[in-house]
Image 1 (cartoon, rainbow, N blue to C red):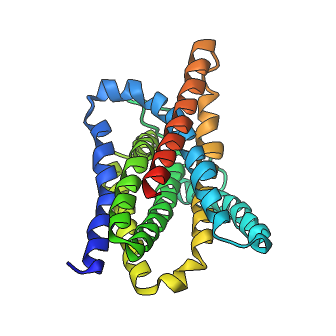
Image 2 (cartoon, rainbow, N blue to C red):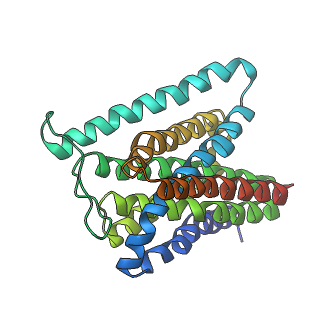
Length: 270
């Protein structure tokens, strides 16, 4: 079997398999999913921040020389500000007016009726996940071009550490008002960028190599922005001690799980 076919198969495994595993969340009954959804948002915050600060940013800085640190940091800053502007544009598009107050309420099933901020958060998570998955595809292809066995292990490690993040993505998309079928469709679409990244890397890894840290930085900035600007404010709507402690515990669980899976993935690669 040719190396290109192996890369296509295993990038599909690394991207699509994680989405299908996480899609079990969608199979829960509506009342059970509505009860779990607020907890999923807290978990997603921890997972997104851990992926950004524990995985993407360190990997980006490891790929550049010290004299490039400032430009890479500037890319993260520009990314955060750029996603703010992008979200503003998405809100204006949904509201059809610059005077729209884009803060909707949720129904009994945890679905948001906002046509502004909530919808834009969903759009941003799809965009950020697409960038992240594209980079994963490049990394899987690079591992295959080094050693076939290393490529297989890397693709399985990518799928494993993506599952909890994808569960968080589903929670965010449902919270943003997407139906179950649309959440699955858009998450699956974003996962296919893993295959795109793998194929492009196979044909031009040397050309992509210099840009890879900046893709990582942009993916990190999108996750930071979504977690801090869109998701954390929603947690402040409930201020009782029990709920607050649950939120803190679930954020910590999201962080610890992603960090643990990154550690396992690195040990497998070694």
